[in-house]
Length: 613
Image 1 (tube, rainbow, N blue to C red):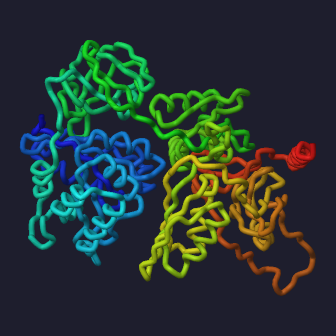
Image 2: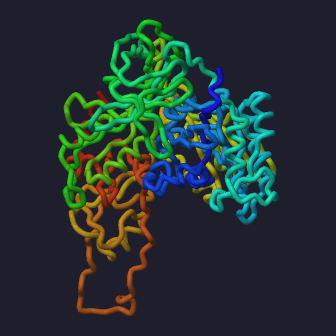
């Protein structure tokens, strides 16, 4: 049975293609939205991190009412590190809008979500945005979309549907057109195409209840909130339901509150019918994949498997001499509480305290996945330190060591392709595909996750910033052996003082600096990278000796090269096993785990002794 007054669609796009603006204009095209003066002026609750990083980090739901049809819109994350969200939330949709820029065409990040949408069997409608942009080529963007869908294994039906359902739009100017030059100046053609041609949910409203939790929200007042689609029957506030876990265990629970999505927020309701998306309160310890069903006539649904974490990082309370200068929250107990609260809301992360109570190990899908949590905490006023990301190994049925393997894709000008292959070769990568178009070369590799760390900067360097690099988790494969780490040594401060220009002027001849004059440094802090192997302890506060003689060059000022700065992800990829990243609300510093040079020498001797034994 079709529920004709419902449409569930997902939006697939890189944020630069105008996804947020597009949804904003769709909302404002409806009379009910314009009449509601209480609704905020922004869409999808995009936080500052998402705007800065250019990605959506969590799936979100909104709804639009148009011609008595409710359109549930699901905003999908675009990065592979948040793939756990993508695979699940697409189960709630029946169709998808592939939103691309008329100038740039499909972006590499779009490929990841589009592949999952095709595998899920969704009907895909193409929306070519920014057709008013200088240099826009809507026809080429449209053909590139079809080529990409064919490359990702789209069925004939999916390709035919996409070819027949194309909209040309300018979200900034608020218009959508069936032809780039037809002169229409509103969004109604896109809304009409959604309700006329997107498939309605195929559900049985008279069957027993079947709803599956695909994402989790958390409230400090009511605990976990399970969000998912009702596949059959209806769910009512106050219902006694059976909750079936992924492992087959089950228990009864009472629906205490029930919400449905209403424009940018949620509205409490008494009933949610089949085909709609609901948020359920009252299920203790609900988790991804839980099936809510009728206790007397239980319905079985296919379980949802969450991709296993591939990287872990240990969070510790800061031991820096400068601790407490920038942040208000520095205690180990407060750090532990914050991380375990995150475990309630973020089910894609695994969070455990270390046996010796020295820190908390957080496991996730990638460095970006973990760094988003760190960025949130530093903005909340936390100061803490983290170690080098560690790949999570496992063993197969024969006891052989297995490690996560990524599929990496690089698109670069032809003249740099040889250098790119060389970089991957030194990092354990194996080329699986090479496609040369005459201008741009498309390269695909299989590479261990260990080899990915720090690879982006090397790719950008050898391609002179013209390469596009992205990667996704592929599988667990055989252990690839030792992979070379950072070859250059570090410059380490010997004192706790401010950096002086005179000292930095002599040090920059020995390598690349990470600090500038006036930067607060401390003993054991990494202030630069040496041009050779092996660490070097330096004095960053050395001043010029004053004498009673003058030379013709004595008053020439020191000319310093701008220091290298690190983003959070770059710092995590850069550090070695004996180093830490100190994270504060205002600074990201690199440091040695042991701050004292004598302690480091003793530790090195102990390690060498163990190796000889």
